[in-house]
Length: 97
Image 1 (cartoon, rainbow, N blue to C red):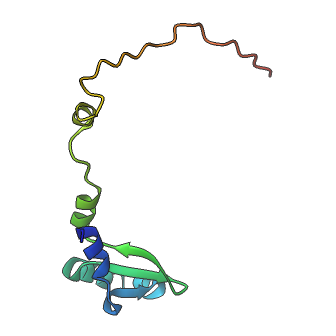
Image 2 (spheres, rainbow, N blue to C red):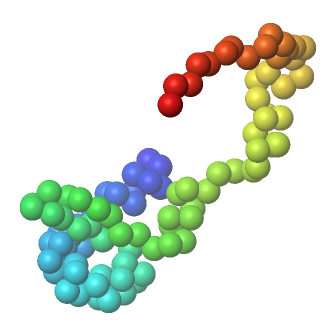
Image 3 (cartoon, one colour):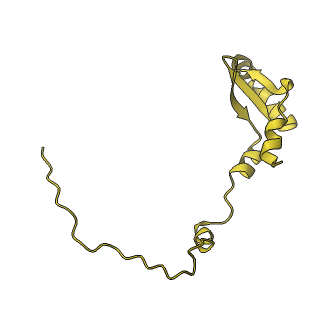
């Protein structure tokens, strides 16, 4: 089971908030998120958003490496693929006022 899945499965009735309560008790919502983890906010009875600690957000959205490393890891890296630019002139576009 992935950590993302376990993060979602941690949701219990104690960490589900109606939107109006989340708005009026936002400081408490933040404190509980930092101390107990995931908090879920509902709107009109349906789960709408999840509040997670910032460190968890960073971990979930972090992209490994940089663009250069990504390109070097490509299956085409080292292949003799040659890409040539079309050298024809651009098309003429008639612009009317």
